[in-house]
Length: 151
Image 1 (cartoon, rainbow, N blue to C red):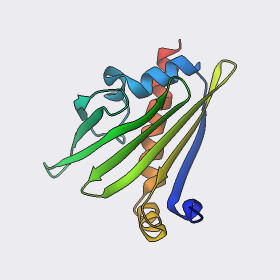
Image 2: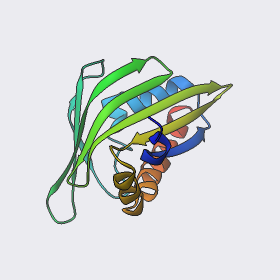
Image 3: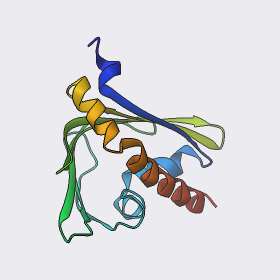
């Protein structure tokens, strides 16, 4: 699709931790609990079936007492390389695809996270709603976690 670039938001990071540590932090429920939500929010793992065709579903408690549900289905998994999943983050974001790439670089891990939106307009709206702040906060927590795990 020629408009893919206009429908994609990307975050790239280098984690100061080996790829296996970063992979495990991204794929194991006990680690997901510690970073998936923005700072100050707790998360519950309702379902986590990490395999192609497997479903995942997490819940975050909102300050107003409601729940923010994120869920999807794994479409492609290449161990220590790539995870592709559908995703809905209700009530804010629906029908997106998450693409997560991992690349070993010595004792560090290059990490690329892409969110593909159905339309360029929806992509722009999501960016304006705070995409980079929200995911950036979660990835800061991920970075703290992998630093701890790799010591």
